[in-house]
Length: 316
Image 1 (tube, rainbow, N blue to C red):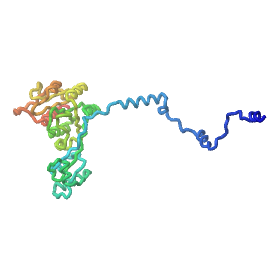
Image 2: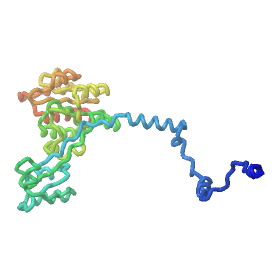
Image 3: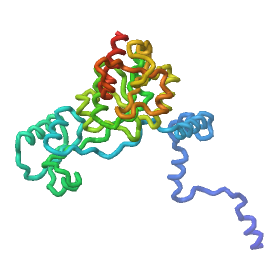
């Protein structure tokens, strides 16, 4: 009988009552989960899949093209050089001054110019400046100039077309003197050109010397760097530009060249070797500048200036 009584009193349902301490869980279960996220963030939704695909595609895109990797900061050393660079507006970053340096007129002017331009002024012991300059005669003043930010060759034509103008560009083939580069930049700016292109290797770059020679015009005239000059000229041709190379033995005289009235890139070679073979073969015209005085050749900066003036005269 006792066994039957136990079976009758046995619970026949599996339902359980409230568990001690479960109130917080039940309350959380009744709470809302916040606003519904947008479709693009809901996993499995069509818009979410599209957004993920677009993100992956963007990650695979190449980075924006530039003229090449940046190099280290350039150092301008010596009192006269530093003062001249500051006068010409070379985009310097920091002026290092030797500790306990004897003041003279150049030191005072350098400090005043640096202060006016908001440059960082750093005092350093002489051994530190000797190390920075590899033992050059810095005379207690060292100016740090950050690497020049080159444009891409396509930037020059894009800017001209955006302004509704025919591109007028100068390309330098084998110019190794930065002062010649600076002179060309100055001429391009003076005659309404849209920029200068230089090779990435074995050619002059926008150093402090080039910037000084440009007389500050490098601040508004872009310089681009091309990894391969021949391919760059071919790309310009596809954009509709005529490629005009300057050569002492050119087939056309400058005053006969009608191509200067439209989109054009003027190619200037080195004084000694002229245009390289591949670049010369790529040119649509090889042009010579008449020189009644009998000179064999012109300085690259002067030659570019003469052609740019003729182009500006015709376009006017």
